[in-house]
Amino acid sequence: MTQLHLRHKNILDHGAAFHLSRAVLDRARPKVLHTQDYHELFWLVNGKARLYLEDQKQTLVEGDLVFMPCGTPHGLQGVGEACHIVNVIVPAGEVDALLARYPQANRYFPPSGHAPVHLHRGIRALSRLSSAAITLESAPRTTLHLEAFLLPLIAELSGDTRDMPEGIPAWLRTAVIAAEDPATLQGGAAGFVAATGKSHAHVSRSMQKHFAMTPSDYINARRMAHAARLLAGTPDTLPEIAEALGLSNMSHFHRLFRAQFDITPRRYREKNQKGVIQPV
Image 1 (spheres, rainbow, N blue to C red):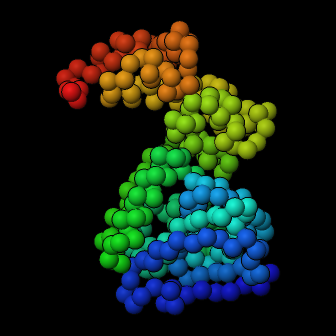
Image 2: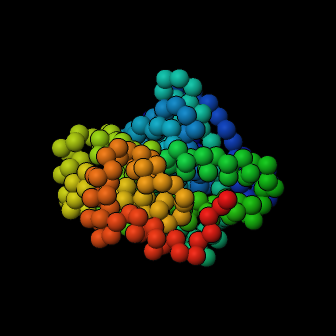
Image 3: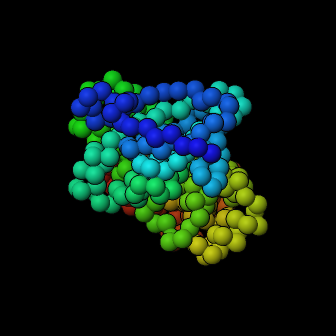
């Protein structure tokens, strides 16, 4: 497939630090792939899409976020019903300046010609990203406003991925990030496996290899970590917390929590809410 090269000077206004656009993807397969002299990040607000690279194609779904480096041939195609995306274009010089101050952000801005970074945002994270994009859309096209958008996003993504083992496949990384979303936690191990798009047996083998845990053990550990945050920071009752995590059996909830924290949920709340003033 032939290639087209795009330049930021033909897209951005003179002196602009970024360009933001919204689009409905064409359902026709791209006739050519294109490269570019700028970085971009885009995410699907709804619908499905195909991302074409030189040697493969990837399916993107609502909530998928892609960091595309300079010089990487690619193309996008909408699939099925209207696919809406948001796209932010950032000149290479802006990214270089940001990485000089925050080198840990380089995982999201790969070198020219490298594979894109493909992540997934759950419904709450996607809502935060969409709200931040609305603010950016109406802001002056300055470095200050660009970094006010990028830095919180990168900090949030870094928090999501800080405990990832080396060598974890992209599909499992995406599912592990999705497991921080309460909607995924509600679905239990079945919901976690569904987020991978792989068979239960394949997910089980991969989880044992990278985390030394079964999918059920992993999702229950995430459930209890979320329960601990709710116990310490909210006035929600124990049944409300258990229900939010997809656990209808209170005895099972208590056993899981005590096995992880060696303390009952009620006692955990008493220890961690001392001095906390609850809203009236």
